[in-house]
Image (tube, rainbow, N blue to C red; front, side):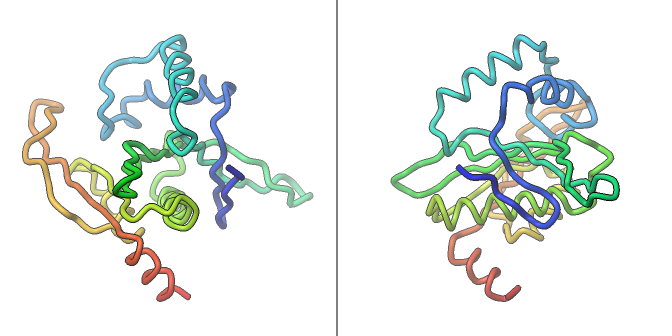
Length: 191
């Protein structure tokens, strides 16, 4: 897959050299607050995860979200990894996939980079992989992510009531989805 470029971010293949950065992110409690992971990951565990993803179909390999930073007077972009995203649970018969995303560099939260990366994933999923439906799960308490998903065109489809226990209480998991025709209709509106 070629690198996917947006206005401020790009999505590229994950490399072995990304493992230490991923491990730092996945061990930061603020970053993992809304992820299903609750255990610390060693460098060896993160390396084993990386090895396991190489055995999955290419469409399910995670992509690194790089942010373009302008370098000095040259204006040449320097790329900083700030998160990752991936399609999972792809079903060819139904042309459906789950998408997951997170930003590990907290200083870049709430600036629209996650929304831009998600829109790149949707474009890739609908226009290149020919998915008909892309869906995700999000904790009810993750207001920032829900707002971003709505901006990207997702709609709430349902919920698993009190499905995740965290910090002493249960949280609903909200299911959100977007269909191919909705993607193209939204794309046309934006011109």
